[in-house]
Amino acid sequence: MPMFNQNEILDTIHMIDQQHLDVRTITMGVNLLDCADPDPRAACRKIYDKITRSAKDLVKTGEDIEAEFGIPIVNKRISVTPMALVAGASETDDYTPFAIALDRARKETGVNFIGGFSALVQKGMTPADKKLIRSLPSALSETELVCGSVNVGSTKAGINMDAVDLMGRTIKELAAKTASQDGFGCAKLVVFCNAVEDNPFMAGAFHGVSEPDRVINVGVSGPGVVYHALQSVKGAPFDVVAETVKKTAFRITRMGQLVAQEASARLGVPFGIVDLSLAPTPAVGDSVARILEEMGLETCGTHGTTAALALLNDAVKKGGVMASSHVGGLSGAFIPVSEDEGMIAAAQKGTLTLEKLEAMTCVCSVGLDMIAVPGDTSAETLSAIIADEAAIGMVNSKTTAVRLIPAPGKKVGDTVEFGGLLGSAPIMPVHPESSVDFVRRGGRIPAPMQSLKN
Image (tube, rainbow, N blue to C red; front, side):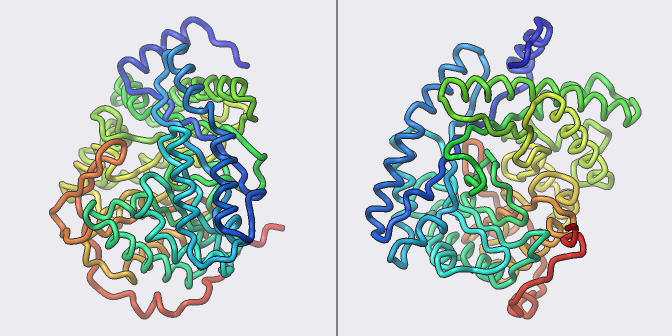
C-alpha cells in the first residue's frame, strides 16, 4: 500500500471538489469458461449464478470506499469472458438468451454495465463467433445495459475483412432495431483491433482468457484536473506542459491505485490494473478537447490538434506508470465525441471532422468513439470506416476501436441525445463515394512487418 502525505490528500480533495476528478469505474472481471454446457438453459443458469455470487458485494464495497475516502466512484461494472467462447459449447443457434442472463445478473448485482458479449475473430470465425455476431442486434436491443465487442484485427494476425464486412451490416441492423432510441444499441457495441484483456471501460470491456478467475480493474479519469493544471503554465514551452501533465497524471493515478487496492482487499479479489485513461464526460470542465485548446488551439480539430494530443497521451502514460505498480487497460486519452462537451462543440462548428478524428486516433487511446453518422449511411461505408481504423491499430501496434451510430432518420446538422455519461452527438458527415467493391473483396488483409518480431 503506498503512503500518502497530507499535501497529496489536500490536493486530491481540491481536485475532487473543484475539477471533476473521479474514479470512473471499478470493474470486476469474472471468468465464465466453467459455465459452458451443452444445454443453453443450464449454461445461462450457471452464468447468472456465478456472476451474482462473485459480484454480490461489488456495489456496496464501491459505495463504502466512496463514503470513507470521499472519492466519487461513478460506475461499478462487470466484465466477463467473451461470450462466444462460453456459448460455443451449447446446442443453439441464438445467443440472445445468454445476453439476457447477463442483464439479469447485472440487475441483481446492481452494477451499471456488464460487458463481454464478445467475439475474437482477428484471424477467422468459428461457428460460435458467427452465431454471436448474428445475435448482436437482438441481444443488445432486447437487453438494457449489456455491452458487446468484436475484435476484427491485430498486429499479429492482420485484419479479417469478412468480419469487418459482417460488422458493418450488424451495426446497421442494430441501429434499426433501436431506431426509437436514435440507434442507442450501437453505443453498446465496439469493434476493435488489438483489443486488450483487462480494459475496465465500457462498452469494450471483456475478461480475457489469460486473466485469473476474478479480478478488480479500476479506471480513473481527470480531464478537468489536467485542464486546470495547464492554466498555471499559459505560454510556457511544451517541455513544461508535458512535465505538468505528467505530474498531474501521477496524482490522479495514485488515487486510482488506492481505490483499486482497497476494493481488492475488501472483496478478496486480486488487483489487476489501473487504467489511467482521461475519459471525459458531457459536463463542462471535464473535456479532453478543452485541454488541447488550453495548449493554444482556438478549436479542437484545427491544425496542431494531433501534435497536442500526442503530447497529452504520452505525458499521461509517463506520469501514470510511476504511480501504480500495475498500469494497463488502454491508459491514455479518450476522444469520444458524444461524451466530451468540447468535442461536441468542435464537431458542431465543423472544425472536428471524421478525417481529423482518424488522424488523432494514431496518437491516443482507442479511436473513432461515439461517432453519430447519418442514418442512411450504407453498411459498406461503416465497414470501410472500421477497416481504416483497424489498419491504424494493426500497423502501429496499438489498440484502436470504432463505435459508430448510424442514427435512423437523422441527417447532418441533426443531434442525437443519449443522456448520462453518453451525452449527445452531432451527426457527422461521411463521404458519399462508395466503398462497396473494396469491402466485398473479403479475405484477410495480411499482418504487417511489425508482426515478425519473434
